[in-house]
Length: 166
Image (tube, rainbow, N blue to C red; front, side, top):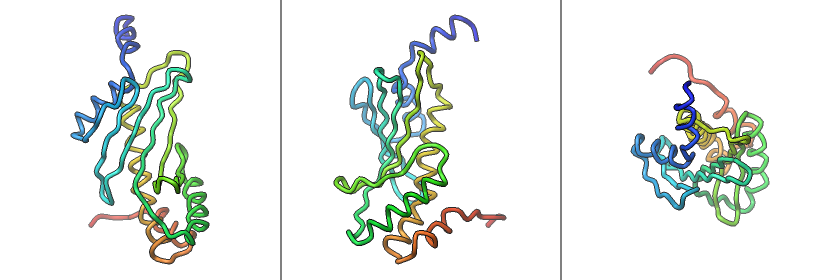
């Protein structure tokens, strides 16, 4: 990388990169401010809401991927147990349930201290991993909450791998 290329990269705001990626993928997005963007990413099971925000204070690009969910109150203890199992399978990010907002959430923070910058590939991978993770565990959540399965049984759907071709 030449000095001029490095200088140009340093001037690129991470949310500008996200906006460019959203445009390239034809995702609906709204630039909420200089340091925040919200978008909708359509996947197999549902459309996910993603918000990415840059904090210059702690040099972190934060991402929240969410979808609405209203489990019955009596299912919440089992849902939290399932969330712990899901998080055991995640190497980046973590799932949580925001009961007040009725949102299932995947959160991830990319720390870029010391003036580091995330490239488009890294941010695209971050977004892809969030949506892939939500898609992977969505059937397990549905089976446990609405299908009456135990968290252990529901997780079998998420950890099973398909073999061969259809």
